[in-house]
Length: 452
Image (cartoon, rainbow, N blue to C red):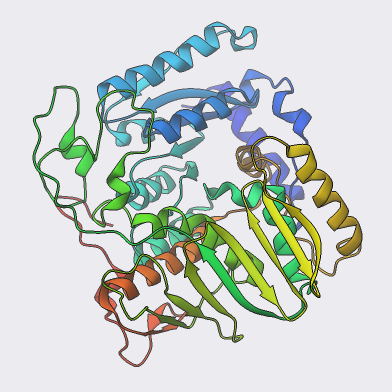
């Protein structure tokens, strides 16, 4: 039987859905710290407590809208450190009266079984994203899941189906869409300011390799079998799961059994922005061409869209859109715009002078986007946007379909590098055309008892 508190909270979470419209829900920054009654707070559980999750945890803890009830990790040290972080925070927070403590779980299924948790934040290695996300949908949770969305094209579509069929809110952690410089760059492209787009250069790192790490002795306190989960069974190596509170991003991303190399790691950011700028959030390229030296190449794959636009995977980090009237380059804290050979804006110091970047973006918006034909979804904070959408029941800025389409571009690139074949792709049916690829490539093999 549900308590009055649970009923009150869930009525509150669903109430604003009745008045939802198609317009983006913008959460004012002042609301992030505004007082919220305990019974109306969004309750959170965190799954995977490595370096990325610690940053997410710190951000969500600061929101007066949330209350963290549980954490989960297969490493005892990380799990207990996360629990302590949560309890220490609330012990110092006068608004946390009556807080009963943070539970710590080894197995994500125990956390998902809790009826008092509204949403989960998933920051595990990539090979776990799909299974945990779909289980969270079945458990009735809303989901913030780190990028890249998943390990295969079929997993991506299964995640979309699960989110839609269960009516869940899903935010992919491709947070560049919540940064102003990327939105402005894409609005310039979408409104034709640089003319008809001809090419896109997206700079990300290279494809993955097979894991060949040697066995190492493992200290007690890590559930290695659960870390592996659906991935192939192999001996422990600290490169994959460093023990304790490491302050770096572990190199499991390099290996195709657990990630997609730099192609999916950074591609989930920069290929994602290319898709946004080209208006391809519901589609993708129709042809993928590997470089001649595909087996050793770190970049060089080309993607052709039905419009004739060609995107190239390059080494320079960032995204460059080139059109018939100019070009725009964007990266984190970096932005430049050239029109008809004249430099209209250029800012490349992304560390020391954020107001100067804002001033240049202000000027560009005043001159070229004062009355645009199209406005893109505006979010100034990826986490706040997720929380706002939990309340409004509108799709967030990087909805599961967006994450699925972007990671599909990444996976198609990796397939081209691995097999060295030009791939003809139907982005609507998500199938290869004219036997240019094998349907088996769209899946990953699951091991042990795990199944999609």
